[in-house]
Length: 453
Image (cartoon, rainbow, N blue to C red; front, side, top):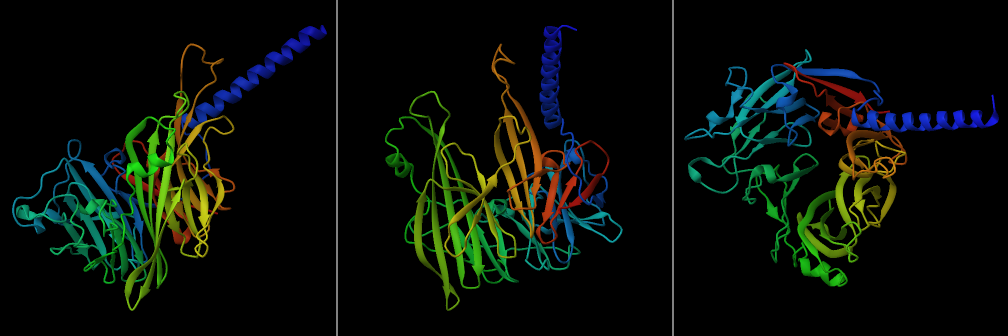
């Protein structure tokens, strides 16, 4: 065989191999093929509720020391859940006309036989939160109080693991006159709990509240200045930018690190067009940090500081002294995994957010981060653009979701065999277990778990 022919065949084989390698990366990412299945176990079945009928917002598994809960939401157009004797119809606990909504929220609890037994249902959307010890369960709903009474939307609670429920007429964090489903909570110790909503531009309000009795009574954290900065604040930092967008990202995070010390972070990200008019949009960020000290049982503000160029999109304590977050210190809205030193309050980047298209280039964003005792779990969204020489006739992009876990705090990642971010149903930090379910249609919802190690 002539030498030139041999070289040509080697080049063709090499190009074919590279093409197959490229196609495999794209297909395995897009079709969600592959991934690890560490210590897979069947957890339980929620009978009669199809996976496609469960939405993502405020649904999934909540694990406590006293029970495992599953919250699902059914679209009434496809599936009617009529009240039944084995579960409490919470609509009936309210006076007047029952609320009408195209959705029904179902609350179930895992029994000894591996079945999630529905214990309650309510019209509309609802979020389940529990006390730190799991003894008390709250269901925060989105429908108005009876007789147009105004104030916070309806909240139910159970002290006996779902056997009976009561409407909290006084509310949960009664000072928060908002839709209860908009309230974020953070439990510390047996009875202490924090709650917050959007930080408003009010002179003496932080948007954060503290309760020493599980939310029955609460006090706002009063500050001397607004925590959320106006748009003029960041615009003055970048006079070279001529076109600013109306959209603003804003998140609040609360962390109590000891019985006497706590912190509040309010992160804002303002978007603008690049001054050159050609490059990607810019993200101009600022984070306001409040340090709190408890003296004689009352929280006092010690100081308020602002850090330009920082945006915190996630923050969590693993229960063993490590505080991990997703932070963005650049100008393109891309986060990295980082650890917070709770003494110096300095951030230490640990690793990049993993991409399902790696080693191909892709724009990857983190959807959610869970922090375990010894592990990290992250759901991602990646967008890969094929090179123009391969897709020369126009612009194209290929997007895919994926779930990864890390056992070395973000330095390296392994992909999990989970159907995208909607497949994750919950995470138990203390045991490093992730709960998931398959995303195919069926009569029941089967929940599984992976033990991360």
